[in-house]
Image 1 (tube, helix red, strand yellow):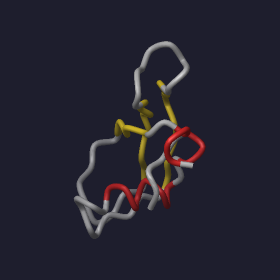
Image 2 (cartoon, helix red, strand yellow):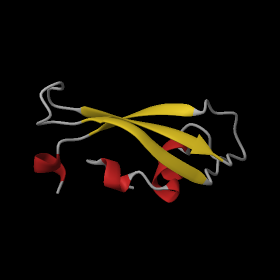
Image 3 (cartoon, rainbow, N blue to C red):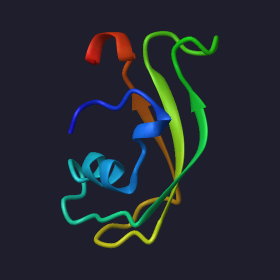
Image 4 (cartoon, one colour):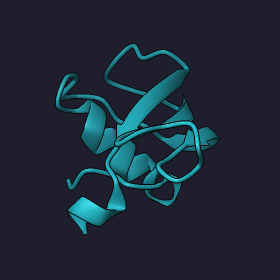
Length: 77
């Protein structure tokens, strides 16, 4: 998994890959982006953050809302 850079990359598959570094059996069925603060929007510096609501989670007890830090596109593409 590469470091995400935008809310477009917040799919169930990608978020599952991210949380599996801590919860190896986790599977996330659905992801809804509920907020984004990314570089260039005036309210973040070098790393942005995206808030997602996850659903249909199996294999781990996760909160319904997750905040995922993302990288600046300039450095990782």
